[in-house]
Image (cartoon, rainbow, N blue to C red):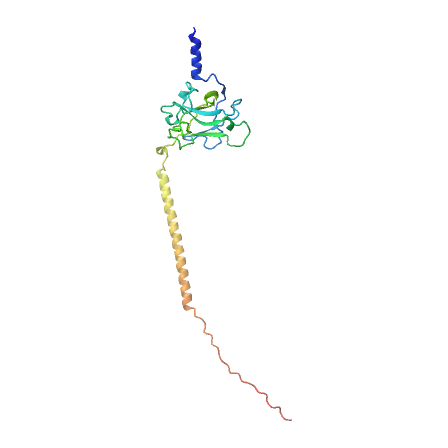
Amino acid sequence: ATMLPLLLLLLAMAHGLDAIPTLRKPNLTDSLLGGRTTASTFVLEQPRCVFTNLRDDTVIWLVVALPEAVANFSNEVKPGGPGREFQKFPNSTLAYMTLNTTILNYPCDNSRDITVLRVGSETSCAKDASRPTCNGPLPGPGPYQVKFLALDGSEPVAQTEWSNLIFLRKAQPPSSIPLMTSGHSAGMIALTAILSILFAILLAGLVATLLWGSEAGGVSSTFSKPEVVSVRRYNTHHVYDQPAARL
């Protein structure tokens, strides 16, 4: 009988979930936003007006997990510690923690600043084991589940519920892209041939016009001679006054 309370206490400490407040679950951002989900990223709404009555230096972490890790997830494992490294996800690690920031960066106001989080946007640290909390590209289409966890130092003080399943887009293999049918190919060949003929006709007409203009200019310059202007010389005859007639 004395062992039962001890077992219950150990069970509560192991899970750590029931001892802290659980708040509303995260959601993907508005569907009108471009790139809401890609082949390796997804966009969440920031947890604004979610964590209240906490110290200003409380750190909010995002937990990304496979669905099979949700039931037995422990809040007691430190971010980036064994079992929480991004670089080992999802092979030997079923969940990791990333995008840590203080609660002051999630103000409860009507700010027009960017209020979304893109998960999976860092490529530079994806293989860097010294950065186990890297926000690296997600390794496959999922599904994934996420939640926000508030830590005061290393002590969990609040959390959200787990999100709904999040599926990413699948990259389309080249073999699945439909090729043009033979009908389309024949049509393209015919169109190309017609355009080539029209271009040749246009080019021939342009060359003929240039040659005709050149010949016309040559004939004009050959037969057009400058007029010879003859200037006749006249001798001026002076007329002298005749003596007045005598009366």
